[in-house]
Image (cartoon, rainbow, N blue to C red; front, side, top):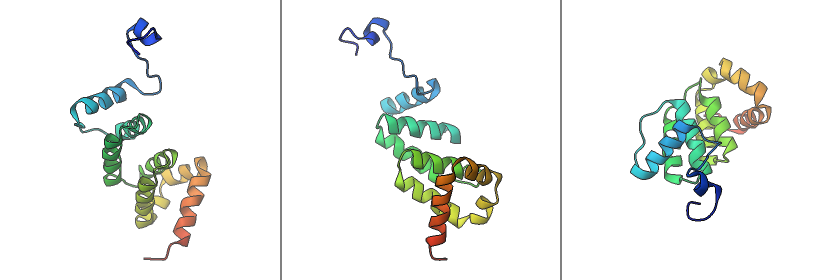
Length: 136
């Protein structure tokens, strides 16, 4: 980009409109240092999406690992949507397993109620999977 007559060379910058500045900065810091700073849940969701888009697989795995370890009834729906959107079957299975192990807290939460209204197909898929699984 910077060695040919492309817009990036002329402007001396690369615009990445689909990634927030702080997320891009964290992603680049990770690429150059192989270190991931301690972040809040929302930042890990955004960083996971950026890592997936730009195929930074080690960063994606680290974000996924954090998300799996930090699931709770109030954030599990966000993680399920993220896993489904990025076609990450491993993360999706981990999230659904969490839901099934904590079904009373998850299914009775306001977040799940909102989730079922806004993500009908994914909610139905998860409930069908729950129904098909043998009781533990």
